[in-house]
Length: 188
Image 1 (tube, rainbow, N blue to C red):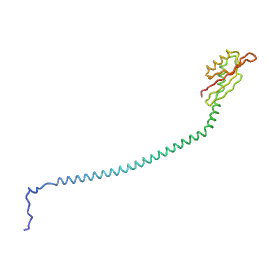
Image 2: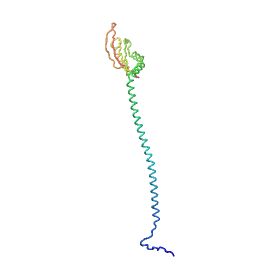
Image 3: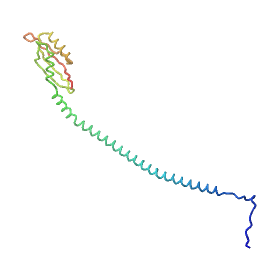
Image 4: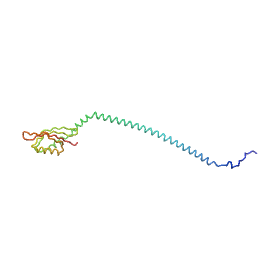
């Protein structure tokens, strides 16, 4: 017969252990760790690329924002330069429009309502300011000082401002001739 190796039945020095469960468990852990590492690597690659794209788009957006800011400053400077160059023409045109829109009939109606019966205006010199106020210099002929005082009170009551009497003289017929300066501010 053939020689068989002797059986070592000394279990005290080398006990048999069932290591199959532990080997399976360690191999399962290695596979799990490999899968988790693969998922982590895939996540890092996916979001790392997306992060790089976001950073580049943020940088591009900042660059566009800076360009827009420079363009805005340049346009604002151009507008201010044009305003400075055109200011004289604009003021001239606004002055013409202001003079054209002034209601002379309303002003004369105000004077007619303010004049006492026997008084009348003999001279009338207007000048229009840039703000729309009209400075007036009038020569008024009145019967007496009481009529002149009534005229001044009526003018003040109708909203005329800065009423000042400059010169008073007696006419040959005994009437009082007075120069008055005043301001009429109209509502635009």
